[in-house]
Image (cartoon, rainbow, N blue to C red; front, top):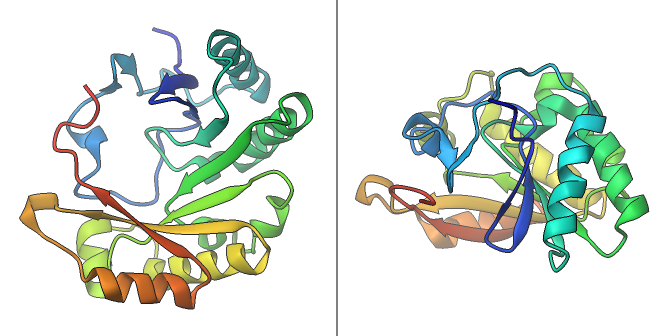
Length: 209
């Protein structure tokens, strides 16, 4: 089975760059199923080029010309393939200037790379959506199960860095997992304090079928 690196879903084209992740979120659908709308998200190999991603992206755009949004989001943390991400985003900006580009990220990239990578994304990425996931560090660690130290503060700092760089920044939380609900007002305040708006995503038990 070949790698699914670009796929169409719900009016958008998504790019699946990696299955590696620095978190192991309890509500992540990849622990329950291997596909999104019948498209296999587990990669046969992590060893591929930007050109291979671009080839699949071109195919999807050719077949879905109406699409305006390209989203880096799959079964993994897209910023772990930062060089490929930047190369593909640059290609989209040059060839498909009418498309908007978003990254859905867990916000730990600056911890991984030990530098602020956000300025490298300016001019390439229109929106960065950061998984806030919780209103405090204790709940974040319980739900996100991060593999990196001080991940929660890293997420907040990443949101602030994104906003300070002039990139539209959204903080997201998943609400309703196991019947649990967040303090939405507090999450809104945390997002605002770090230059972001809040997006509440209702938990979908079985994901997209």
